[in-house]
Image (cartoon, rainbow, N blue to C red; front, side, top):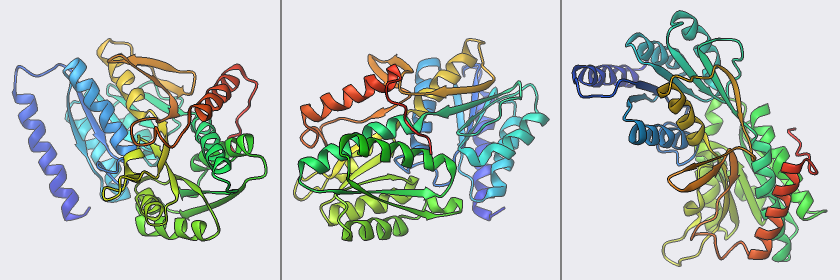
Length: 346
């Protein structure tokens, strides 16, 4: 374990000591260990943290978070939180699968949740999965329509780690582009084959620039922090970028000129999934096994309706996506929900 991670763990332990010493604090305690890239990635991890914050505000739960520095630290962080008597321990990302299997067996009375990990048979583990291909289809439709409207015929996809999970994003996106703009050429590249592929903005920019040089008019990234480099390339070369997981539309905004190149973002509502999981624990209704969140799964929080997966519209991209485009996206959404459109996963 690195010295930095050691001190982070010590700091969390000290903070926790303060937490348990206060009689006024909430009954429920939640601990979270972030995925590679950590808090502040404006994507996957930040979405998870947002869900934790919602639950803290709504239900008064207390919480701590750990940012692991290496693979071995995942299990260390989970075990430390579980041993301190937390009610729910969350691993953010599929990389936690083996670690949660091990720690959940050691602490059978502690509840665990994992994002993107498949652990179907432990009575104290909830696996939260998503239909990323459905949301990716919708942003693919937007990419295809925008490219066609601008008289171009090429788009791109930049993935992080070359694994089946990210292939779902790619497959849905390609199908959506083809649905909206048959014949449009699609470039596809991955940043690598190890977890570090999700935290390499330099590689992301390099791949995006290469696709732009080949004529890509819109690039969709599913690459975590690596996507920051894709947005840099997009702004430098005036090419549209589609964000992922959280709403990243603002990352395409150029302050000096007011131009916007964040076309939209594929929303993977990790925040909603975790909020609902914590809510269930609060209400004594924890659901072990596998829960899948898709386009048809909706919930209203603070008067806003959230889907399991969706696309983002806001002030940054409202002038980039026309009402006619939105009408066609809504039509595609209805066809997916009715089963008329079967979105591929690979």
